[in-house]
Amino acid sequence: MGDYILHQAQLYPQTQFIACEVYLNGLQNIHQLATTADLQNIQLTNDDARDVLAQLPPESISSIAVLYPDPWQKNKQKNRRLIQPSFISAILRVLVPNGTLFLATDIADYATHMQQVMAQNSAFAATNAATLTTPPADWVTTKYERKALKAGRTPQYMLYQKI
View 1 (cartoon, one colour):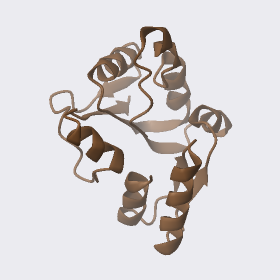
View 2 (cartoon, one colour; view 1 turned 60 degrees about the vertical axis):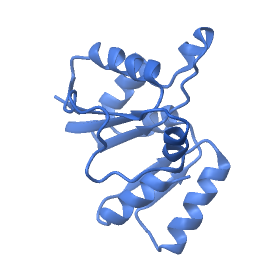
View 3 (spheres, helix red, strand yellow; view 1 turned 180 degrees about the vertical axis):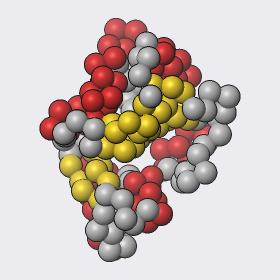
């Protein structure tokens, strides 16, 4: 629903943001709230993030956040998860040196999967390995996260830096 991107855009008004959201209700909500708040630093797209990354020039993005992607929890569906080696390679291509990748999930199995995928790529270093359940200082709790907490799931936050 855009809680995170709107918060970031307000905190960092000189930074340009691209919000990829495939669900139209979420995209419309972000657009409405950004317009109401007169935020000029958010570009919205309902394209898949993989397609957006493919269109960006190399080393053109300083930070990427992937929040609560679909966990595809059934074993036969896990190959559909967004966080895969090919997606991480696409992110690596567009991140500037020392750029950051922030991942969040409330599904323990997916958090493990994310960590395994990231461990396969030596171009990234984990920067918060000891504090996975502590959100970053500039974090805002999202609507989805509130539902997860109410359901008893523990969010995990992973921060990686391109080296």
